[in-house]
Length: 98
Image (cartoon, rainbow, N blue to C red; front, side, top):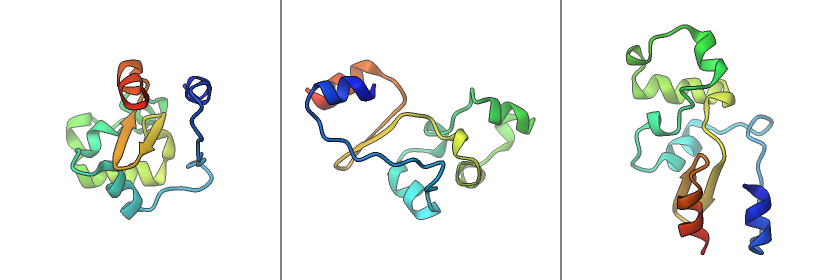
């Protein structure tokens, strides 16, 4: 994904959110009006290790978990202006950057 964006001549500002973790305010800002479940990496081995049923987690708990364990945030996470693209949807990326 990164390589294809660079090939388009885009300048990327990258953030390693494993080292520079999001604050709750930053994460909620990235979510905008989306529910936290859209940003949560349900297929992550880190989530499976928790052993918590998905339906037992409310939105605030999802945000707290993503702040504590960045592996629970779907990647890539790309912000362009006010738009935030989550995951590897090639069609969405093409629409956003063409």
